[in-house]
Length: 178
Image (tube, rainbow, N blue to C red; front, side):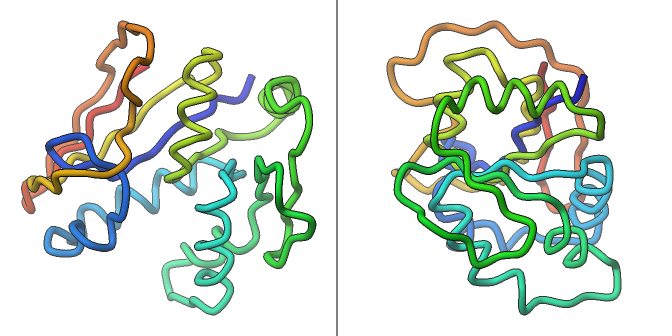
């Protein structure tokens, strides 16, 4: 069975919102290699509407020599939404009804892992339904103060198991939990 993996950029104070405002000071080759390997080990993206719209605006015009943009642009993309009527990024399927059943069916299809980037509201909902198999939390050595967090206030207690730690020279640490 395929795994659903949440891959998030987070500040030390747990903020996942607006990484463009706080993550770039800490970028480096190690992180790029990590993100490339992570994407190559998957073959689909599961996104919320807001993240999808931002990605659909940016990624189709991005090219790179590594092939990361090709993967982003060509992978199947599944978007959980109640408002979108049409898609503008290739290989996109809207999930509008019975989202938990549809996502369970996606997990049962043959293939590699399914990645979620950003998509706070989707992560909250899937966490509550125990549909997340792994969290890869890329912690940046900065605080941001306010914004959406990886786990919303009031979410039920959940014990996770640390399965891997990656540390980069930039001070960024990836904690992988199941």
